Image (cartoon, rainbow, N blue to C red; front, top):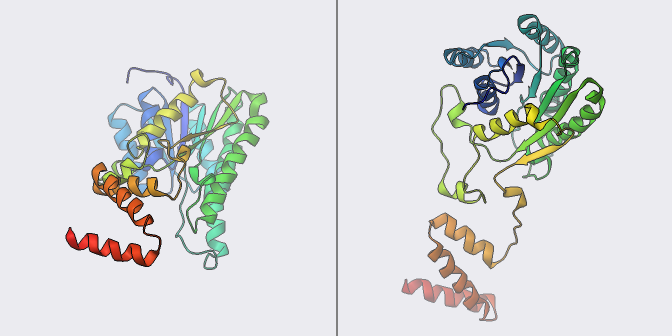
Length: 305
């Protein structure tokens, strides 16, 4: 990689055993950072540290549930005692949701997601700042595009990520006096399969990739690269903002018309000719004046294929 932006620095990455967090820990470590991984998956955390150590990255694993203040306090104290500094905090730990309908969602499920995804970053920031304010630093919160866009039945998760973005700008203003910058990053669709323990094969289809204006689904390395920049001195004038990284999906205007159908079929069949053919068919059917007549003509056309 050829960069040493974090030599002599210490970073804490929550949820750093697998997925996006693991890629962030790996990237910062390659650039010279000493890495502390906080996670509830003890086995994966210990395995990840072994991997980092094999690459000469100084790292430690600490078991911690970020929603538990005693865990967080003790973990942060342990990091400081070991490395004598905390310069970067990446609040990445988070959990998803079952997808139950609003009527089926329970208060306990709501509270657990808010506790981990929102209270956790607040607790980690609260305790890390005790040491970060001694020399300044950067806090990066991993939010989600689900803070702005939702699928059905994601209320707890979407609310937690929206709150995390609000927490980001609040912290940025409160901690500016200590020379601490705070930024949030909102990933879109990220395929984390290669960053599991053990690594898994991707199950994505060509359609999944083609939906993205950038031409592919995101990878944890994409997020790690952005986080490394934001944590570096090169981003010293960036604070209090959220940055979306989603391959262009959130910028894509979608209308339910012939163009969407044409594009969808072209992606599904991996053939733009098929999409064009069906669009022409739709245009012809619209000229027949009634749904029943169109259905009749469509049946006749399909019988000849």
